[in-house]
Image 1 (cartoon, one colour):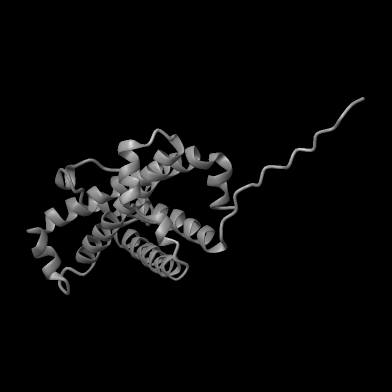
Image 2 (cartoon, one colour):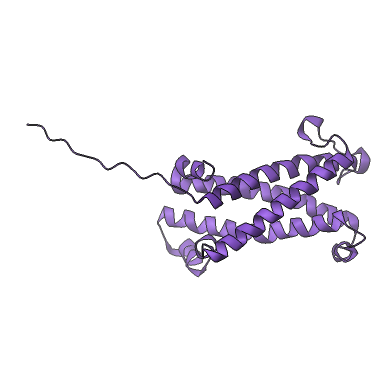
Length: 199
């Protein structure tokens, strides 16, 4: 006599369409800003002046300085508006309660032995830490875009060169967040979770 055991299929993670749009817009705008930013960088490298390190054209977008600037600031608007509407979305839906670090997350880092709980705590810390970095990138970018109108931003950093260095330094921090965010997501829910953010 044989008995068949029915196993309930595992429920795959799903995401709201707003989360999918947000992630796609972020990926596209970050790629455009990075490659066009490298085109702008080539016109006057931050480190070493005009004789400094130049990026090969295959990694740049825009063809020349003005073209790079056009692409960069168009992508900046896409990125900024995407962050703004997603911020409004998580406020309205109250998802912010599950996105950003809280006292329980800090306690978990000290006491818990639950690996999943630690992953969630680190994920919320990363989510929270990226906010001031993004604001710094946008703030310094506006100062570089309109230095005459926003001369006080340049003055705040002491000089034009210091402003450029801070803006340039924000780029690897954003890239590092993207990598950490990706790997923490895979640890929390596997490839199904990360793929559900896009498909």
